[in-house]
Image 1: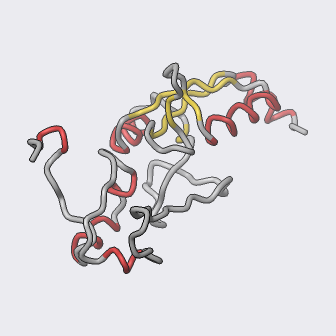
Image 2: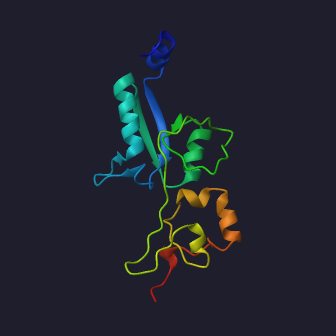
Image 3: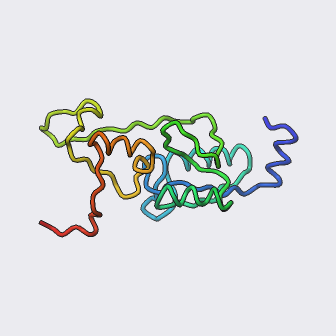
Length: 159
């Protein structure tokens, strides 16, 4: 399965430090005991089983921290990424191993919202540091009124 050059590389790099956004279930998240879990973690475990590589995690609270890990060399790869099609110069993408789908959830009994255009003028909720916020398209969403900066829920007073 692996050629001599690949086996030599693995022998020289048996532990791979990776970084990823911690709050991106089902791709990556922390399980009930605080351990990394999710589809990306499972893919890395399968690669490790086949190759003998061991992957060490750095689950981060923001996409800025993920990119800082890549820039400063404390991680060799990002376990998964959300992209608007632009690739930062610090990374080289692989072929996708999965496809993410965003969904719109509404209250039971509410009129269904069929696509993103139906969100115009509506209030949406994303958790703090959600990857979509970091995407360049966030500025376009702000321009069309789909996404407006809001003060943190932690700083909000109950009404």
